[in-house]
Amino acid sequence: MIEDLNDKEWNYVFGLFSAELIKKYAGNTDGKNFYLFGSDSMNEIVKETILREGVMPENIITESAG
Image (cartoon, rainbow, N blue to C red; front, top):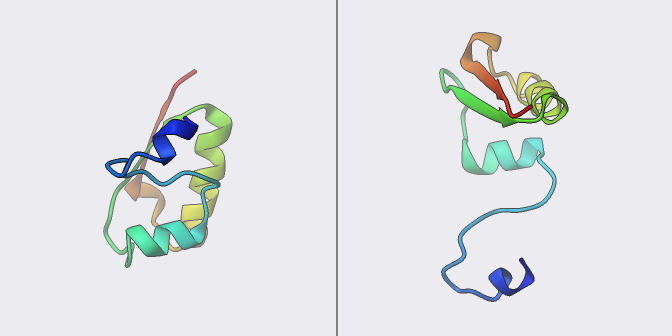
């Protein structure tokens, strides 16, 4: 993974999920759908965060990785 950080073509964000990331990459969340895929605990943490940012529950689709 560390070697990927030196690759100029590497175009991903890593770190803790936060409300700031939502604002930076999604902007206004009105009417946007959010697809969550991961462990149940990860999905729950992300869901709580995006709900606090005003995302409507019907705009959150989750799938568990197990």
